[in-house]
Length: 234
Image 1 (tube, rainbow, N blue to C red):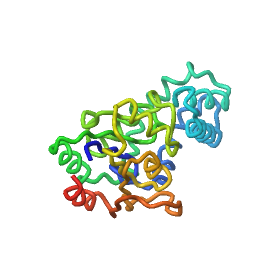
Image 2: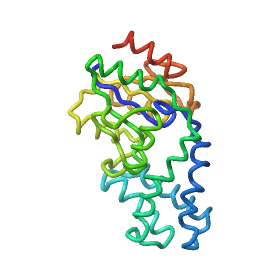
Image 3: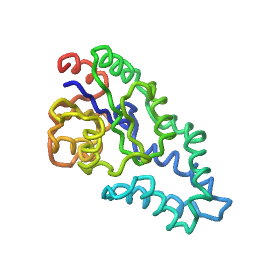
Image 4: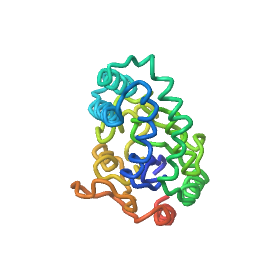
């Protein structure tokens, strides 16, 4: 295996997704209070926007899919609020690190693979703007320069678990599926890569969608075990 695709939330950055979302969503909603948008309506519009990205058929970017839905839900022009939303994700959003559990093993893993000459890609579900993803990378103790590619809503036209998301990465980077390993914590979203012949590794510490069918090629309980297993796999 020469190419290693990593999920971020719950994998390189351990967290409880529900706790994380409940922490930061009200902060985002507060930005719209002066516009007369109730918190529940704002959060609902965000989730509907996420749904539009998940259902994206490749005809537009996830960014456009989100904003078309979000603007329609709230009867607000994208141009009137986009800068404010991006400012939130670039700044105040950083408080949400309190709802995550950064693990220094993430940095050891990346350094180990890079030291072996392997290529690393951040295959995080592209439902966030780049600025939000860059912040979460830093929370994990990593750098954007660690990755050959970082998937965000600006550049992707599919989302997990659509296999089109993984095919986009393979096509953009010129990768062969059999030379790749996808590492994640979500049985539904991350193991979907296996449908293309990409081998998969499931980190179970922050397991998501545990009842989903299917099994990974490899499995470990946390990043520390992943680090040890990679010494055997690489």
